[in-house]
Image (cartoon, rainbow, N blue to C red; front, side, top):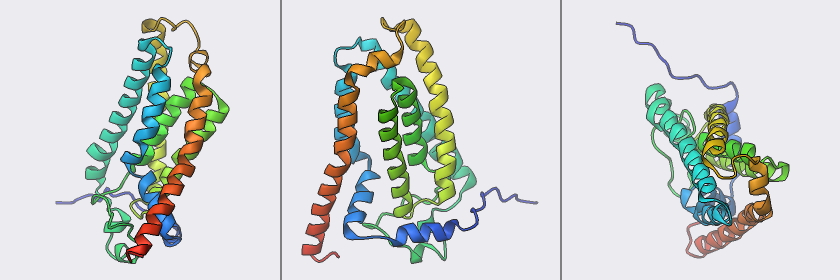
Length: 238
């Protein structure tokens, strides 16, 4: 019986890229990259964005948008964790024999066994695509995608994804986000009292607040990371 090896090959040079990114580390960077990659760190940001999403808008607008965001995450998560990772079974760098022992492991975090493709990359960029096509504001889109790329970088910094994991995740996420944005436009035209107005006009009054939240989030997280690194040094962890 012949068994086909369906594990996607690595891009030439990406092991070196991963080692370079993972090898550039410091206590502050460890804390920052670990936290920005953690779902819990995003709870305050999501709470603020939800507040402005519902503020002085028909509830149908907010609920439709939240449902579409949830659909993006559900589809990307199922394609990544539910199908691709167990099907292709490509080990994460931290679990790859001959490489895992050479990496800098942050706070003992290695992730699950398989990493192709990145659920973080696909989820974040799918939501970013949906938001960008809904809001249609250059500055806000720049900030959103900027945060996405930092999150993607953090996954390589932590040593849990190769570059190809990230790139395929981006491709899946962008496609998903684009298709869900079309669904969102179709639904709001039929279900929202403001469906006759472009979505950009509906969200425009609160864009400054969204931008402020995204701009403030990273410095606050960086300051908190500095405090964490300082405490860890005091107790002798570093």
